[in-house]
Length: 342
Image 1 (cartoon, rainbow, N blue to C red):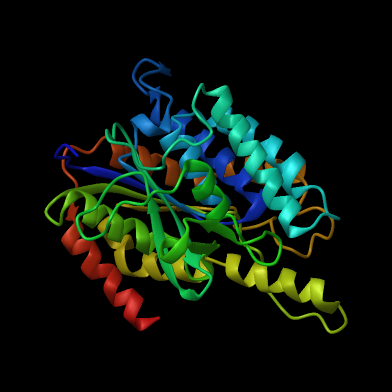
Image 2: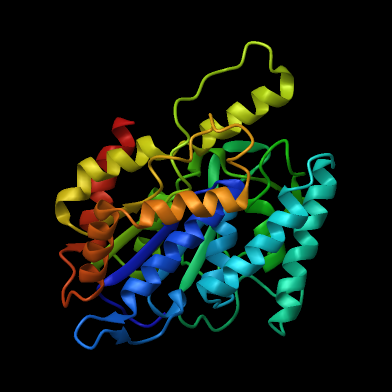
């Protein structure tokens, strides 16, 4: 990996079909980053992989990271593919976990074919060009620990032999909606599930950037994109097992506490941007929070607010900065204080 400086890093939370909100937010971000204020015209590449140095994600946020970085898609192209995944993977309610996993596998393979790529495309390739990316998952027999499935090699671990399809299935293998994902054989066999402890993978993004680029490299922007605040979470009295599973999933997806802690620690540095719909996405909107049209409308309303516009302006300013104000060593130290306190 060629030496870099003034890194632009991005983290995508997990959130099932609410990942559609993240793509709407990214569309707004890319519009702002490619707009020339002096000439009032678009200027530069509209591909996120040409603007960011590292993108990491969890669950469907990991899927988005692969679409944008590994497969070099525009936000519009990724949104179209994501809508197709919603239709075939998440919308069918009365299918088994294995059938849902097979549907996601087929959708991912179809995406690769459309891009002219083999369905067994390795996650890590010999030549890493452009934006690096990773997804998080856990091993089923050690679910408390998080593993990063990378598109790039690192010195302290042997490179993964996973394919892109296997990585997508692993990071999206939320229990019990999806089946676990098997990879390898014999003593090398692994069984992956979604990483419940890293639904907001901001810590992993910082750690991976440190491994990849070194501690002396400066950072000009650290972006965290959420799937919307789910509101107050409580256990149902008579909802049965399915309702309890949904609440547990929503508890996993409530990433705002970690986001707030990061804001408290590194917000004053000026590089951190957290963009996530803070009103309107709550789960008390029965029958709506799984509706793509409703999610899109709530996100468009969020992007049109004055305070969101100010956040986008700060993000664009950070991208244009000549010198990042903090190194990865310093950023890691800031986050470690948060990590050990929580």
